[in-house]
Length: 173
Image (cartoon, rainbow, N blue to C red; front, top):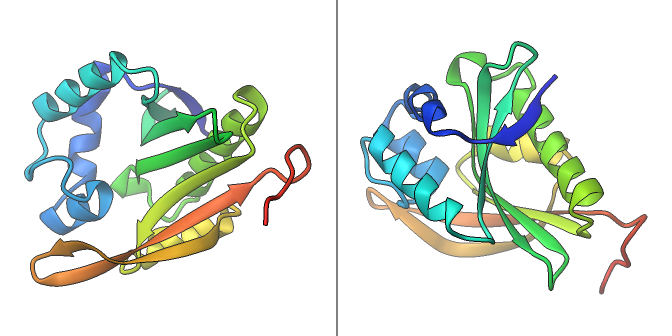
């Protein structure tokens, strides 16, 4: 089981080891943070998020209350949408379904608490493990943004994905 709660400053040190190298970090944040990631960078961004009404930083916690995941949420209530980003789970516990559970909780929060019609996210095409996780969590490809990010002379496409709540909201065509 995974539960969502607001990310706290003391959580920052827990996620640092999950982003073990520069490539993993680039896949996670697309250059928003500088490598190597530090507690200070995370806390600075958290402070910025706390001042905004359209950005929330969340932690996924297990049954014992241990932080096992992290993600950002950007609501757009005019579009009845919530965008998820910078999703990561504990690197020592990957492959155990935590990413899927974290996304299920985030989608349930979006649909049931916020009342939005869709949840979106983006993933680089070279991040096959994350792409598979998102598909298992009910996300489908919406469109592909070609050449969205360059990492050490590699050009990555960003796959934009969506999960819609069709039973409550009309599906636009």
